[in-house]
Image (cartoon, rainbow over all chains, first blue to last red; front, side, top):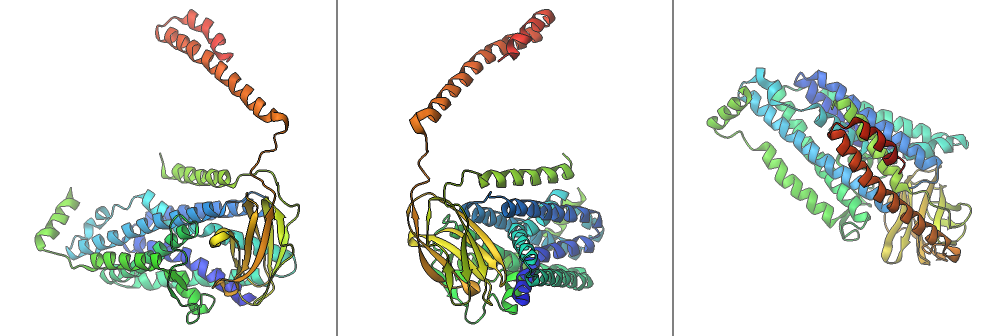
Length: 281
Length: 183
């Protein structure tokens, strides 16, 4: 009872905290700590809305139709992918700027506006926040009914998720800038590909896209989502034990396009000087 | 616009959208919730039929695996789903079923596979409006006529008022204002 709820907390918590911790590390590494308040505003807004709407759905008879719920989750996920992709290429630009020894101009090169920071943090947490909040209320109600284990387990899972995200942040800020951008950038490519697949699966469930039953693979026997490693994989990379063909194709296409673009070497010197010139303006 | 007010707006907007989607219509369907007891090997639905309308299931997981509960229409079209029902939890699923017919319930211990299926029948119809003697339709018709009437008078009188203001005719504008605002 305790363990399975803890895994749910871990999974939902990681999904939310992972991108946020990388974003925080990114802002800290590039000495843009003043933008951190937009991260916390985004996170806070997402949590507040999730808790409020979760309460409405739990304590009143108001409900979201299944299609609306899945459409919301799917669309938010796909928008989140767009923002994470933007962040990946900011990172690339940043590492290139360093390569061109324009460290002093870093701040200008990374005009990551408050709005982008806010929206990214908001989506990272809000995407799955509603489901997490509704689960939380169900656990509270069961605790009031005398069974506190799901609630305790869920709390433990969330704490572990936040602790892992914090460790990731601590580890990430220790790298030198160049390696930091490469490692977290590659990590984010796989995270975003997973979120994309997840969003498309939601749209398939809402019958907005076809092919919900056309599976690419079913790994529920070998790598079940309710094992601790399955939960970790799902929390970090949105691993799905029953992956549809649409999900698999989108995942492969995203990685095949974005990863080489991110890792492609900085081209000619002239190109680099162009970038420098842009920054000076 | 400051980013902070933008944040608040985004939040408020999302809330409005969500509650608007929610729709709080009448409970045309059954009175109470239908209890579902899920274990790792069974899925017991207390009542296997209900009237069309909002149908509420209360799913209690007495097994050891996390489970999901679905209501399917023909062709496995998902009518509603509640996931992450951890062992020991009771979670609620409200589905708005508009059409009578045969449906299927399913518990999915371990959140995988086709699930443990059961037949579920929905009777009656929630789609038809109960408008005895056409009174509702008549009221709507009359009110629409009234609104149109008022708007037709409001617009030209407001235009006259605006013209007077623009022309600097203060007294005329003062005279026109109370006439226009009565609509």
